[in-house]
Image (cartoon, rainbow over all chains, first blue to last red; front, top):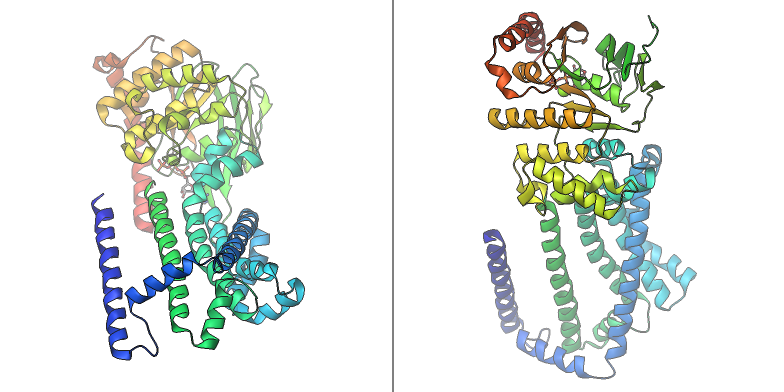
Length: 248
Length: 273
Ligand SMILES: Nc1ncnc2c1ncn2[C@@H]1O[C@H](COP(=O)(O)OP(=O)(O)OP(=O)(O)O)[C@@H](O)[C@H]1O
Ligand SMILES: [Mg+2]
């Protein structure tokens, strides 16, 4: 309990610190390149109330949700399969690691060719970023399940499917969740990046346009929204993550 | 090597040997055997032996969790091989509580895999909770319990399955001496009530002496049976047995045989470390 309240206090201090830095940067750099925190929040609020803005928000939300669902499902299936089968894991895990380390942007033109300029390409690009950490963490989580749990499953005469559902998966959940948390962030990066490079709708697209027009208000407001959403979700996920890891 | 099996026995081991093959050039370990042993139906059999002599290995082979290198094991006349048989319950030496389940769900875990009705499961789990002194902890998670309580959860989880053959690997290892004696009495009561055959591994000589009809004394690794001691206790014994002269004689005999073996095993492991 104590540690948790200390965490909150820490979070608040960091937030305050960042706001102060931001304000200071604004005072130094001036109106040409930055807006103050207050101005940005005010502009973001106005933006959120504009009917023309909603479709972009919805587009990004939809793309992100779909990408996350695909990344999670793919990551789990691949991770559990490769984690359970040693030979398959030895062949495919290095391939996943290699894919993880290359800049996915290099693959985007191919995705665009495959999926066209619509929402599908962004979804694919987001999922491409997100599924690998989920898969890699799941592989390790499944491999690290304590042998005594598997033995327990065997003496309770569990079949293979029941063993996965009732022993392997629950035992691996804390580690899998860590993968999901990282997958969440990367999926979001992937989705927005996809929108920035080639798209006619969505927050990434608006952001790119704003950069082109040097619309500082818009750039800062959208960035703020993305950061607040990402940071908020991240801390919620981190909290759940910590709680899951504490049970053992 | 393989003699005829005695088909009236509950469990029969003939020439059972286990060698762990070393992976990647590591030397292989001859952990166990050869062992010949019959467990009579309904008897309480205890095994004592120096640390690392192969007791847990023997249990895994008996349970069908691990393949023998040589020899064979029959349970109720059927050969054991690589799979747990119907009517066999196992309590492991390590903490085997599933941390994501409550105490209640841990104990019900095995029963949930069978087609036992919910009501019947509840009845059995409740009585197991009472028996193991965990009634107030049904909704707790293993992480909230002491090591001894977790071990009792594992015992309860096996007992609710009402196995005909119960294999226990140092189940009271994490318990204090008093609780250990009381749990021993509970085990005796349960054994009398169910008529199950019990195979109990323990490092506590007094526990073996108090609980068992027969005690197998194992040698240092590779574990072989040096002697099988008949205690001759009546079926309705309890922990007051420890006050008797016969009890002292049995414990003394166990130590007499084991002293040399334990020194062998300590010296060898000490030299290797
Ligand atoms: N999977 C394994 N691979 C290799 N060697 C093993 C394996 N399991 C056990 N051994 C070895 O076999 C021997 C017997 O181990 P076992 O666990 O059966 O001993 P034990 O009598 O139960 O010891 P303790 O009283 O300490 O529990 C030990 O020397 C151990 O190192
Ligand atoms: Mg052991």
